[in-house]
Image 1 (cartoon, rainbow, N blue to C red):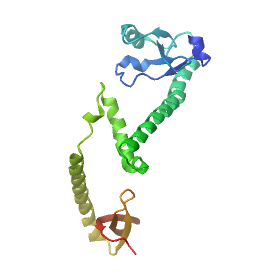
Image 2: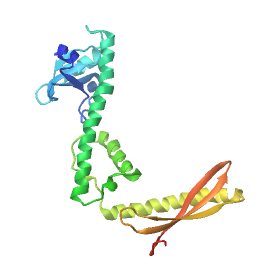
Image 3: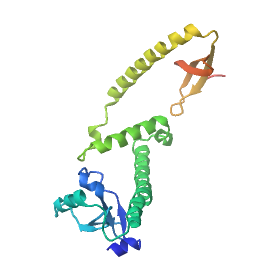
Image 4: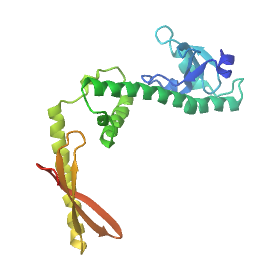
Length: 229
């Protein structure tokens, strides 16, 4: 099996996302030529291969090896480094590519099932949502349904109002000392439309120079009933 790995017939991949045991940091899983996970793991220190299947074999042998292995096996240190590099680069690239394909399908279903515009899965806000899910995932030790963590629209509405009020207070607190120091400032307005609903809005902006750095702040956004002509 080691020869097949060296020849590239078999590949290695990282530990399962649900694996939290410390000994997993010393091992990688093995995939066959059809990208199927096989019941073996490999030590990244000494290159040794062990049989392992979570539902049939225990982990005591792997745990003991992880605690005692110093990386002095038959493979050279350069090969030990190769497996670490390969795991961190090539396989991570493959994993990310696979995850991106899965996420692309999920985004397509989201737009299709809920009749959402394709642009709704694009933008800074959507990236914040996705990043929060990625940050939360490692903290979950068991499978849960997505519906269990998705808030009700009413809850989201209240949270938007709360965030708006918090940011408004922060803006006022930061503006008061600045406006006491500066001599000149400018006010501009921006007319724009919501890309999804085509509703029209007018935003009032404040501009001033503070210590040689230009500050541009949005003071207020109001809906307008008629489009600009």
